[in-house]
Length: 419
Image (cartoon, rainbow, N blue to C red; front, top):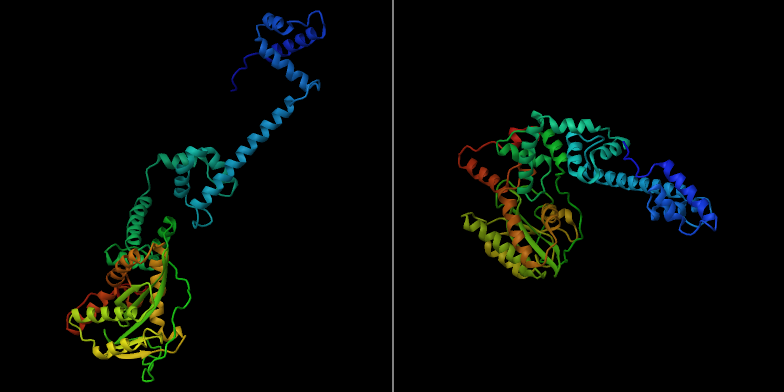
C-alpha cells in the first residue's frame, strides 16, 4: 500500500486554482501565495512550487512538464532494471561457465547466495527465468531451508579430494590422472563422477601448445649415426637416453633448459638451466645424469645417448665426455623433431605444466628453483600415461624388484582395465 500524500490532491488543485486567480488580479497579487497558503494550511514555498509547475504544464513558463518528468522517471527506472539484468546475466554466465544447458539447482542456489545482497533474490530469479533458466524464488528458499541431500554431501567430500589431488600436482591433471591418483590413494570413484565434479568445480588439465624450435645445427663427426631411428623404446633403464634443449621467457631475458631423459622410465636423470646456449648447458645436464645413475650404483656403460644434431651435442667436449663414460653417441637428422620426438614431447609437457602454467618468471634464479621442484615431482609423483599411470621412479623400482624376483603391486592400468 502506497504511503499517504502529505496534502490531498483535491486540496492541492484548489490551492493552485486560488493562487492563480489571486495572482491575475493586481489588487490581490501582492502576498497572494503566503495569504492563500496560510488560509489552507500549506507552506508558502510548497504552494509556490505547485504554481510554478502548473504554469510549466500550461506552457506559460519554460521547464519540464509533469508528464515529461513522469516519463523520464519511468525511463530511468527501466534503464536501472536493464543495467541490473545485464549485470545479472554477465555474472551468471561466468558462474555457470561449462555447466551445460541448465546448471544444477544447487549451482543456481550457490549463485543466488553469492549475489543476492547485490541484486536481490526476486530480480535474479526473474532475469534467469527470462533467459531460459527457470527458477522461482520459492525454489531458492526451499533449497536453503531443507537439509542437504546425501548426494550433495558426498559430492562435496569428493570434490574436496579431487581439488586436493589437482592442487598437489601443479594443477595440470585432467580427469584421467585425477581418477588414477584417487585409486592409488584408496579413494575409489567412478571416472564419470570425477569428470562431472571437476567440470562443476571449474578444474581442468593443462593442454600443450606448439612453440618455435631453438636447435642451432652443428657439424658433427661422420661416425655419429642415428642408432634410434625413431624407435623410442628400451627394455631396461640406462639403455637409451634422449637429450634436448628448450627455451623459457623471463622478465630479464631468455633462459634455456637442457634435459636428459631415460627412455625406459621417462625419468629425468639430468637437467640444467642457463642464460646462454653454450656447450656447458648440455654438458652439465649430461654430467648430472651420469652422477645420478652412478650415485645409485647403476652402470651406464653402453647407454645410447641420443640427441638432435645441435651444436652443443656435436661439440668435441660433449663427445669426449660420452666416450669417457662408455656411452654411445647417436644423433638424428638436422631440423627433424621426429628424430628426437620423446625429448620434444617432454619439453612440450615441461612448458605447458610449468613454464606457462606457473609463470611469469622474473629471471633464472626463481625459474631454476621451480625446475628443481618440477623435476622432483615429475620423477617421484606425477602419474605417467605411458607407464600405466605410475611415476617414473616407481616404474623403475618395479622393474628392479621384478628382476630380483620380488613381487610388486599391480599398476593402476592393470587394476582398472578401462584406463
